[in-house]
View (cartoon, chains in turn purple, cyan):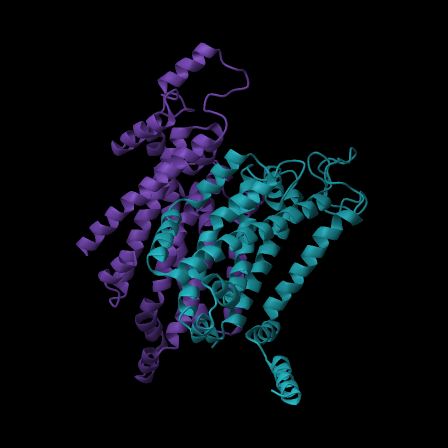
Length: 312
Length: 301
């Protein structure tokens, strides 16, 4: 397993390198620069700024400089938030975004799995159809529609919760977390139901039932574990969904996380900030996929690390 | 071969064509039995007709404000069935125009990803071996990257041109399609009929075009139905962030964005576009599910 882990982590390096390279040149192609403003700056000031941030060098030189910085884990100064380094901005924003994301993920699993198991157990009965219909609504309502609706209901009409702002308190976190979690709950429930139905049709479940085990034990002790495998593999895409979701949620609820830096950074041509966030996201997705694979192998002993290796 | 035998032979061939019940006819019948899928189909048909015909029937224009009514709630008296927005524009017409754009983006961008994905996946799967390995490593590499980042950067680079939205979304969205098509192709290419075609002297490209791609159709149809709502969602997301279509044109996402800002004073400006968007996504998802069940009989219990 250690050998496999090391190999996987080593294979992440070229991926990350590709990501950095593509992102670096893509954002530089974009017309406009970080110091463009309504009023043209005097030429000398512009030259000085360019010199300070090394924008006057050839692109390849800048690229090399950037890679060298990244290797030393230095994301450089922000071009827009003067006096801030990208490291500072990320250290400030990341814990907020991560808290939201992790809470939403936990909520999705804790709520989604039991719903899926229940629906599978009641397959093709009215309660199954109802639950799955509701889940489909959950998938179909985009989070930027859901969030204003939740605000309209709970903050404006009922006045129970604040409409936005951020602190580490239940009342401020509940709406953003629900917004992030609801579509995921729906996905998890659907996936769990599907795989659970498949497992419930397999012969070892028939054996368990033939032995006279109580239905609850059959469902939880025998069927659930193999049925969770597809849910585990959904966690990879789920992590990506949280990341994009955070862009919307942080904007609507005015939360100072890294998702909000992302779009603003791209619009401001804040090269270093955008790069920093992209690299962070890339690392997160890679790490998440790696953890998912490990978990997968742990849950299903038939999968050997050799298989994973030859696949990846 | 005498004239008579040839006639008999042709007749027999004709009859076989008529009698044959293809997989797709079967699937179509199964689909019609699925009430949710049929309902989704009807909703989508109505939605498309409404979005096209609606603006023609209305007295108002999506650009020109009604100077007498700013932010008025829906009412029959003023003639603004969905109310007006803060600039006095009729929301019914704007919702319909927005729907045209959203659906158009959904269809065209899906088509773009379809063409790229099928060709890429079919070639990788068919040639296999090292070609496949390199091509799929490339897909894996892109896969590990934050998808939204690319769309956003492409939008920033190309400016907010609607045609570039199609291309940007489609160009990023083909990865799943390529993977699915590759997997199918891998299993198809070892089938006997491909061997037969090769024995007849068909070229590689002919085999891919005439034998592999048509057989991928089932999977592709399902996937397309599920991709369209995703793409509509991405476009709405971009418009919501202010990166999508630009005024005076609009899309459901842009309308939801405007509506969300006037949430307290004019909730109808959020509710109408939001429910049209959600209903459409809902219908596409249900249709996709129904199609999957219909085309993949082994999943039915």
